[in-house]
Amino acid sequence: MEFANQLRDEGKSFDEALIEAARVRLRPIAMTGITTAATSIPLIFSFGAGAETRLVIGVVVLGGVLIATLLTIYLVPLAYHLLAMSTGSPTPSNASCSSNPTENPTGEQEFLNI
Image 1: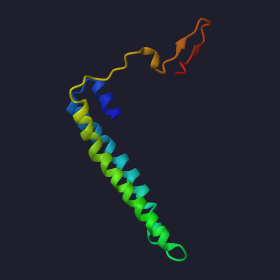
Image 2: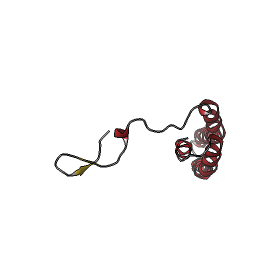
Image 3: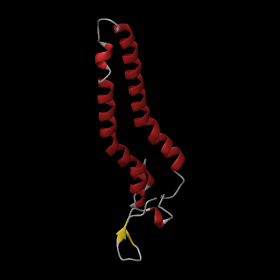
Image 4: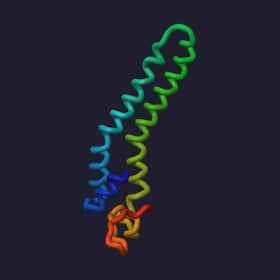
């Protein structure tokens, strides 16, 4: 939801930022979920010694990844909508938290280590 906050900082309305963030982030989330779920397929279809144990592990991993992906796609934006709808744009209140270089007394640039 950080991407939605960045869009809100750029001046987009809450709903526009939420929809665009969900649209842009859908592909990486889906690709990560699908590839992680695909790694459990060999466990599910294995045979030989210990195949029953690998089947159980594979089903648990596949189910967990699919449920986590669906929750990430649907529940996280919904929770953000319900919890952050009445808030303003979350701009940083302290400039010292940025990673911009600052000048020290000797004239050299250094990054803040916070």
